[in-house]
Amino acid sequence: MNADFFDRDYYERGIESRKSCYQNYRWIPELTVPMVMTMIDLLNIKRGDSVLDVGCAKGFVVKAFRMLNRNAWGVDISKYAIENADPAVKEYCYLTGTGIVEKLNYDFCIAKDVLEHVPYEEINSVLSGIKAKNLFVVVPLGEDKKYFAPANDFDLSHCICENAAWWISTIYEAGWKPVYTYDHVEGIKDSYERGTHGFFIAKK
Image (cartoon, rainbow, N blue to C red; front, side, top):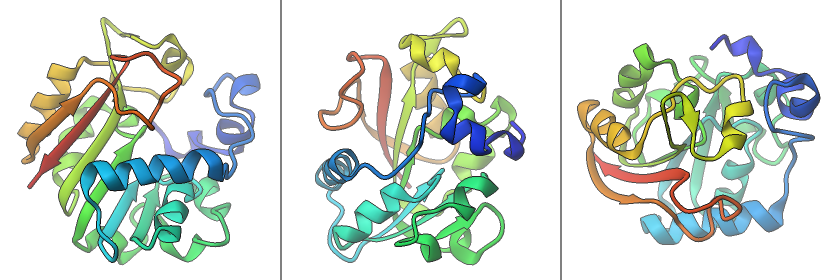
């Protein structure tokens, strides 16, 4: 998917533009902070640990992590998103390929709602290129080119539509050791039915 696809229309007018399900994409602390706290508890991310949010968009997850005393950074391919990153964490969010942030090693990498946007032919290199000790992946699941949660079919940037077994195999083939797999994590994507998304924890 061309990086230019993820423009203002994608984030602010996704429904009208028929690009995505995003609408007026903004900081909503009552949703993001508890979600990030769930990640901290689930992954045992301690104070001072370093975290990379791959596909950080405007940096809201980075902001929540930093509010909770974790050293978080973010990268994203969207020039629009990075240019409009939350002012509180703009200095910690980078356009993919433009900063040293991707070359550093992290305690944890978060890849939530991002890997489904990666073309099949690139997914191995993206996963194997992540420099972290621990990886947390959240992706929509599907089969036969249809997602289990129909809302995910409306995002035109979604490339990969596969079931949990495919994702486990793909993560393993990229050099990661899958440790835990969940079909639901309370506190993350609670508006979706169990089994419509995969939650994967892996280690190097």
